[in-house]
Length: 467
Ligand SMILES: Cc1cc2nc3c(=O)[nH]c(=O)nc-3n(C[C@H](O)[C@H](O)[C@H](O)COP(=O)(O)O)c2cc1C
Image 1 (cartoon, rainbow, N blue to C red):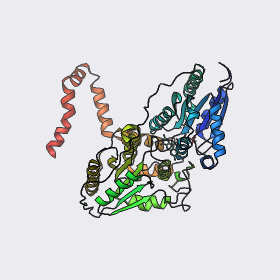
Image 2: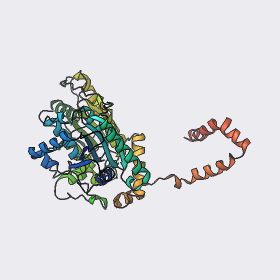
Image 3: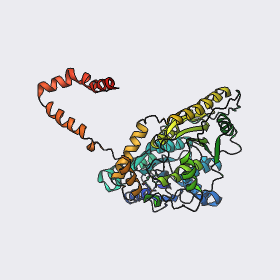
Image 4: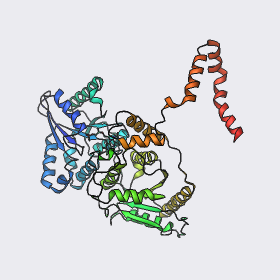
């Protein structure tokens, strides 16, 4: 740092695949404009990940910039519950290239733009990464993508920025939130006798990114396949022709046609294989605090379906190798993702249990339930994760995002997603009439007194009498 109130070098690690032409970078530009005394340097991480990956010299240059910075801002857009797959890849490169030391003790803050759909899971993830890297984490700022147009929001961003710079000046320590992950290396060896289940002709697809060294994952997939009587199609993301990660171009907005359509296998595979499954199993190994960046590429590329569920009614199960029990944030992403997809999350089985026979039992149960639920077409009701997420999309597609997301609007209209309360005429009538009645003091006394609880149950009783 070049003096107490002097110039600070602030390094911005840009997580948008759109590089400089990014909404998030407009927020950084605002900070630059308001704090001209500081020296901001922006590095486009997500946009040039291929080059960063292949060119060690460039990686070294970026490392040098980080080393000489007084503060690092991780500035990123939300992409499908997390950061963009390329940003995730950069985070993987830090450990692959043993570059953790550069980050140690650096003052850092998070700045994102999004529509507040699972922005918290992305922030939790990034905060965890900063804690893992022993950075001096200041705070998180999650801006709505149009917040910059509001004076009050601009004021908040200035307060946050000022707070960050002051925290650098006083060399504030991090208030750590995320304990380090304890890696366990338990070997899973299927032990119990295998009695295959009857799949009743269900179409079971396992999608994985497993590699030769993911021994437990391969064994779990193998066991699951055997339980399904070998009636399983297994696909590996490594073998799928995926030309690139999501560009964030919104070419898909009009009619779900991806810019990569016809250029690689991804769209066909997703539409013809995955969507036609009855039971879909995602199998992956934990990498840092999520799955691999290849898995993230899969989820990001799935955005060609924009804000429309693409696995409605499907049974979805996860096989995970690694410490999921220490990553409640990842569990929530998995739950939120399946609920929002209107799929049924049958369960998640991991290799964390010391007793392989127990894992055998869990895999068997997972397979059994997948088949049973599929036969019943059972989809459990969503929790806040699915309900809340759907409402965020509903409101944004109705309003500010109807253009460019025309396909979503058509779907939401025809599918009843626009279930705003203003169309609920019986509630409106009741609210109006009862609202008038309770203005009368003696009625109010009775309604909010003796009547409230029995009257709440009364319609249920009537219904039960009829059923
Ligand atoms: C492929 C894609 C996925 C997105 N996923 C999310 C998401 O999960 N949650 C959210 O709140 N916003 C999501 N968004 C919205 C972006 O985060 C938002 O538009 C952001 O401001 C874009 O910033 P950028 O221009 O810097 O890339 C997504 C946008 C795209 C194109």
